[in-house]
Image (cartoon, rainbow, N blue to C red; front, side, top):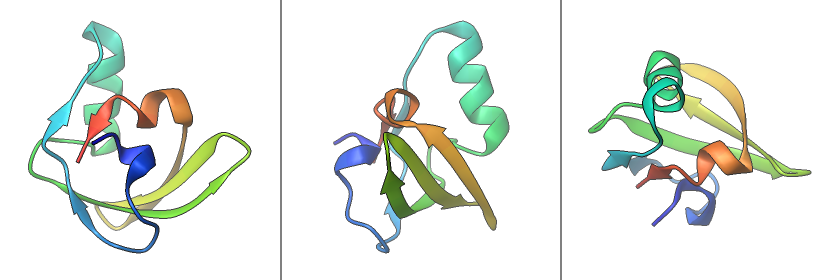
Length: 69
């Protein structure tokens, strides 16, 4: 399921990072890699705030939908 459908506060394992070329590379540089763990902190106004690799990052809902957990 896409990251946006995961429950807030519950860690989820990343099973696939979608997107093409630059988008996929950007997500992987932020720490969204297959096998990694991500936790949704909150979803506000179309932005998703997540904890990944001990960092808090805000990404758009569109990018969050490319991350499968």
